[in-house]
Image (cartoon, rainbow, N blue to C red; front, side, top):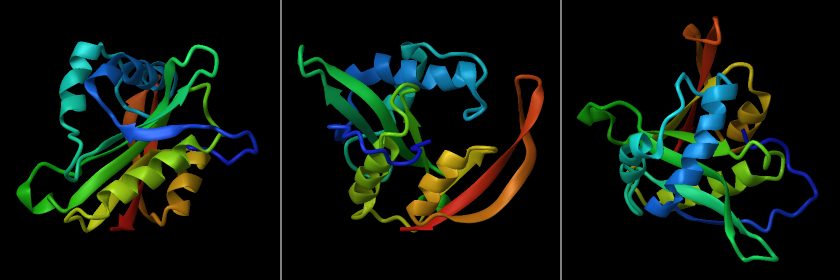
Length: 180
C-alpha cells in the first residue's frame, strides 16, 4: 500500500492500537475485503469478529498493531488513517522469531506517506524484540506495496502462483523478507 510520498503534509501521529479503534480498523480492512484482492478474506467482518485479531496485538512483544491518526483541526476528532501489524508467521514454536507484517491505509488516505510512517513506527517498536525476520506476502499486482516494502529493506523471495481465488480469478502472491 503506502504509495509514493507527495508534498501534502499528513500531520499524522502513530500510536499503538487500542480496543476503541476496532470499528475504524474494521471499516478500513473491509474496504480491501470488498474492493480488492489485497486480502484473501472474501466476506466483510464485523468488529466483534475482528476483536480476537486486535487483542492478539499487545502494546509490547513481537506482535504489534500501530495506528496512524490525524486530528480534525476544527473539531479535534481523531481519524484513523491506517494501520500496520506484525503477527505470527506460522503457528509452530520454531517460527517464533519470524513475523509477518502488513499495512492497510484508508482508501482515501493513500499516497500521503502513511504507509511509510506506519512501517517506520512498527520496525522501531520491533527493534528490541527477539526477532530474526519479517515476511510480507503481496498479492500481485500491487506496485505501491512492492515499492514500500523494498524501501524498508525487504527482498523478493519468490511468488506463489495462482494461490488464491477471489472475484472469479486466481491471484499470485509475491513473498518478501527483511532481516530484523
